[in-house]
Image (cartoon, rainbow, N blue to C red):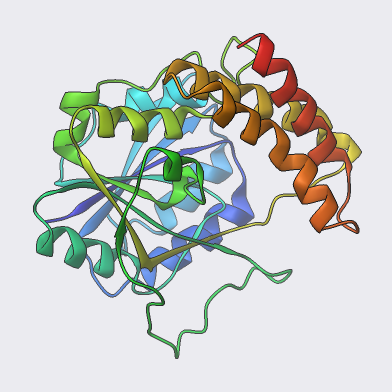
Length: 279
């Protein structure tokens, strides 16, 4: 059993090097990186080549396209039993992939699992390598739970899921030709459940990622993310009260975290409110 890591990148060299270094520290060699490069520059190609003697890397050259379209192109390159959705600014704990493989080997009835997202600190650090522990117990993910702490970079699927679920919805996600600039991974997870797939949350599988930044410069992004969330709720026929809960959530965060920058949460609220009536 091995893992295919499906990655799309846009020439973020420092972040990519950090990801590759974390992959070199994995306690299992049973994985390969399928790197989808959009308009890759020479420096990015040289960076990946520099790791070719330590990692199994397949490079797939892609045109400039949406994230969902890129992932659909990469699905045709699956070769192994498990696949993951990787970001170039992720960092894997040394035991991330070994724990992933052990979990799927021990749970043949599970179609997908959700790991634990961890925030990187200001120096790009996330894990104490001397610690090897898992907190909390594994538990089944409900349809409502698919929206909670389940970003794409902590999702792992059996390859057989792709044959049942099909392609990512190219109307959703960053770069889509619609107002719905998020939610493609949540939609995919929900569709996996709709096909009868069992999804489990596994706290011991940890992946780090930079914390979300709320600023005036990226306020438009958070509006579009809010629209995407509401589109997914509408598409999967969640109740109107449940959609209202998602609209109210950014406002509740503002009350709980009064010193957090307000720009992103305010725009997210507006995106979700607009999406409530114009899904």
